Image (cartoon, rainbow, N blue to C red; front, side, top):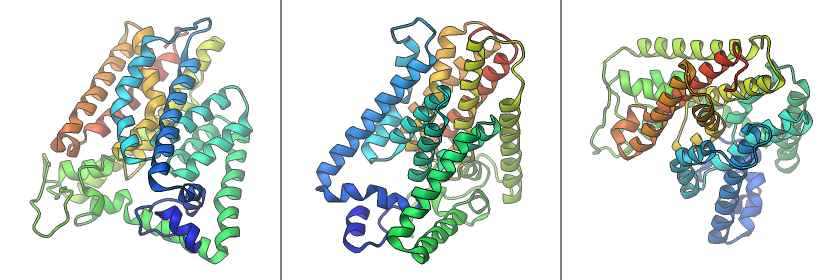
Length: 377
């Protein structure tokens, strides 16, 4: 509907379901508006499923040991654990599968030291959905400035120059200002301090939303009708200021720990060991991106296919020790989150964000272990 409207009017609308997206998003999606709706649905779904298959293939090739030619059990395990969220993306027509493929492609290009291409790919992912743009911080911290420069150039040319040429400078500026205002309305602070934020519903499993639902008796019912039955899942009745302090403390720990582990010295290590360590560090930033977002729906979770695959490979290849126990516990929590999709109460209490946080802890454990042992994680 957005694409058809844009092709007919050259106006980017935000009242047809597409909001919290950059203005260039509708322009990039315009080709789908040339197709009948059902044809567009089939084509987009096939592209999405093909993209996820490519992501699984690229991940398997990147994580396999030198000399291995057949997929490990870990590959099938990671695909199986991600299957509920792959289904969610395919049913909704969401971009999670395509974004997951672009993120992993960017990593593979980065690993091959084709930095300009890696920057271009991660920028395209960020233009489709802002969230992957957080990964540029990882590349900056690792000193890969060509990735960052390529991404910034792509963002400027495609994200700013293209809509400016088509829509005009004033309209492009207005749309970006509107996006910024919308982001403020859905920010973590507004979620925690608002009387009943619009996105407080159980489907949103973001960290600030989950903390607000757990620690205050806020109505999380998905129905906004005046006569709806309130739905609360709180286990405490804290002040909103107290919830905010908990949120800030958690995010401070997550951000500082992620940066510290990204910058930690490798120590005495082999080339193969250093490569594995970097894979875990990139997985940390994939998890951090979802922990930091104020909106997290089920179709966002395929963005974590990379760290989930690392955890599955760790469970298969790194047996024994504390890191292995942490990884196994993480996979149990992730599986529990998938099962909990059937329960609105469990979703409201944060079953999915618990899986994201557990996956971040697994990346911390494997990264910490990798800085001290040359054994394969």
